[in-house]
Length: 130
Image (cartoon, rainbow, N blue to C red; front, side):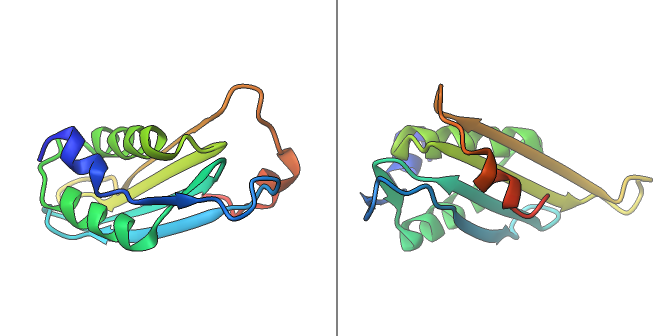
């Protein structure tokens, strides 16, 4: 699946109240790879919000794709979401158990971005730490 087809799965709707900063969270599991990856998307919308059903279809599609590293997958999700909704703030967290032959038990990635000049330390400070 190419980038345009993948991003087209991310259906968007208008933000019901652009004056408010609020956090939207989606999470899911990618089970097709050798180990299950847990993915969490948290974002503060600006003009648009993601449709939950569209994000579920997106997760199903990326689950069928091959990824070199968890970092590659996390960067792709962040980039796709940013392209479709231009959130005020967005964070992607990805974690997966490492293979049994490793002394590392979990491989995790947290990546985030925000619009230039946007800041709401009070709201971000209340979010559960990853």
